[in-house]
Length: 449
Image 1 (cartoon, rainbow, N blue to C red):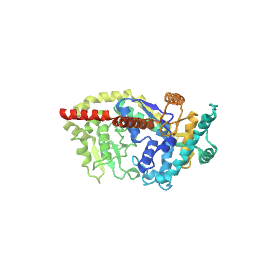
Image 2 (image 1 turned 90 degrees about the horizontal axis):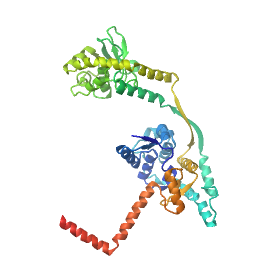
Image 3 (image 1 turned 45 degrees about the vertical axis):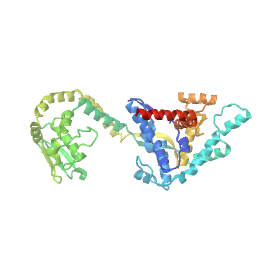
Image 4 (image 1 turned 60 degrees about the vertical axis):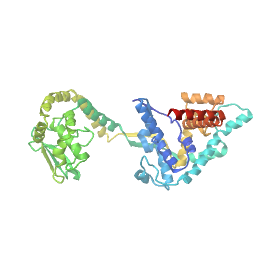
């Protein structure tokens, strides 16, 4: 599967908003569309996955989410229709795939849509005037009349430049890469203590008042139990549980098995999936309120009862060889993580223009649309602008527009196709010859059936 970066949207938010109905379902779908989660977008991605085609995505929207332009517009729209709710309210109450809580909110955004349509119409007034006067293109590809210009300036004044910052994903990417490397390439991890008599002890109220599990050797030395399901990504000793069915006990099962098997992750996973496995015998039925104590010796005895002890002994040498082979590679990645953490955590930054409200966000989107293409073509379906972004598709649309042929937004094109088919069949069905032929075909079909 190939992922490709989309630097400009296929359709801009300002033109899309002009064309939506203002019922609750359409507004909710528009919010999902802004976040690349609409039904149409999800269907297109699933189809691309199934047919092994390229999947397009916007890295800014993917990485910065609510600090990215389209996600931010979603947040501002949600706050508007929910009575100018706060950002804190949004983060507490907004959820996918049902983003809209308010009902009958179309009247709140209708004036915004009408004003935006008025501005959009102004984009083409210069061209109509030039056509009447016989004036050709003299450098300006789009132009707004005086009233619309003043209104757009007023809306853009409600934005400000900002340097946005968030925690960098680099540390997570490095730790995820290390974890994946250990699980799928090394397929083994070193154990904190090689003592064959070690035991696994857990306390309900360990450090910081949380459940904590250690590996304890015969001398009483304790080492936090490493995570085998996600090596080096989760804090050692934490996130475990026993005496019930859940993620914590399930994770503890695999981690104890991996340690008892001297770091063999492959065999630990195989044993973890047994129906009469270690989980049922040692973890699920362990008294929930008591502290944990399981010896490695008892794990080895259980291994013998399920006839896997010989396989464990057979695999030990290959596990040791893999650990030795990849020791330096793992150490390099661990050193990189340590150096990242010593810096106090990396940060991502980007400059952006931040709107104060949803309407200002729409005109900021209009500014970016016109700034990116310099030409505004007109959709033959909805009459809204189609930006010219110098792509192959845009060049074809511009050529068709110059010849006087119709051009469309993608969904307007689909709607125009449906309209043509409807008109065609209405025209055909009005013909007496066609109706008589259909009657004969229906009679023949009934005879055959």
